Amino acid sequence: MITHTHRPLRVVLYEGNGSIQLPAEARAKTMMALLDKGYTVTRSGQGASAMPHDDRSLLVLGAFEGKAPALEDATGRISIDTRDITGLEPDAIVALVDKSRGDKTMNEPGKWKPWFPVIDYSRCTNCMQCLSFCLFDVYGVSEDNKIQVQNNDNCKTNCPACSRVCPEVAIMFPKYQAGPINGDEINEKEAGREKIKVDISSLLGGDIYSALKDRSAAAKSRFSKERSPDKALDERKKCLTKLVGDGFIPADVLASLPSTEEILKKAEIAKAKAAAALAGR
Amino acid sequence: MRTAPPAATLTATFFKRALLSSPATILYCRCAYAQVVPTGVKNDVLQKLCDSSASFETVSDLCEMAAHRDPRLSAIAACGKLRIAACYPRAVKGLFEQAGSPLPADAEILNMRTQTAQEIADALLKADP
Image 1 (cartoon, rainbow over the protein chains, first blue to last red):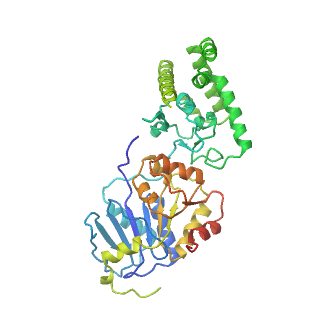
Image 2 (image 1 turned 90 degrees about the vertical axis):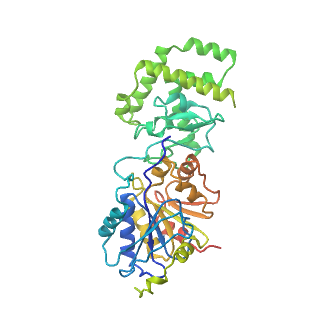
Image 3 (image 1 turned 135 degrees about the vertical axis):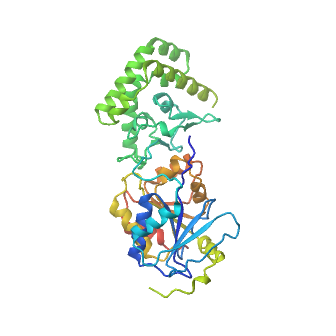
């Protein structure tokens, strides 16, 4: 998990005492322009509480009639800059904020899509299917043996394949178009349909999962007979190819698959992680 | 448009009080990093918030913040009573939880992908009991 070092500047659109209120339309256009550029914006008015300030600097915008006051945080932790926006159009206000930000880097919309799985722990049974299925090391196991998303930057944009193999419909991709993968509520009919998909996926390469869940001697025997590394690899590829063919995952995911050796190694590592986690529950 | 009182009356103390007062925190997510929320709805919700006199918070994209475990999510989750205009409640709760900042159980999440702007604005701006 990377840590975010390019946090956007917190802008405060101040319309309290000492400033002139903007017309509502101008206020909305200004906020839209700033948000679409990637900034976070607080509208400081009346009637609801705002989020406490954090450890960053604040940029306070207001129609101060050319006399932006000098402000100082009482705790001394936050630096506060003020800018007068009297008479400025939204584009000019964005330019003013950009200038105030200076050379501090910031993530911006359009350059990257936040695409990663989100686990609904109210549904997740910790079965580890997602860990075994994903070839890109997105999933991992926490110290308390709980499945978690550990490397979301490894996730292939627009690929929701792991959510389709989750037997509990517990994996969401909030930027996905359709439900229940986008987080929409799940009705029993949908849950049943998802489980049928999982059965198919299990046939295509999921015998690892069933063996992990059923550690009886009989199951272990069946598992060892049915499983061969070549067959598992072939079936996983078939599974992914089918998902591509059905339009469920982008074709470039197939193109970026690791080598055969790497896939086999990853499968073994995932299997070991999953087995350890399940044994430790 | 009203006449401005002298700018000198704006003090850091007043500004802090204005930011921290009142019962419910309103949060609006712009979903700027991917266009999955209908533009008309999200624009209308923001316009209605701007038409009101309420203070509110806006973020460019909660998913982007969750992806990087932005510490601001913790600050949001710690706000107490929360009303959030974003997308599916299950997804929003999951984003916060996955980022290590679970939302309080009574956080109210409005869905701009399925609800009307009017429904959402009414819920966000309703008077606290």
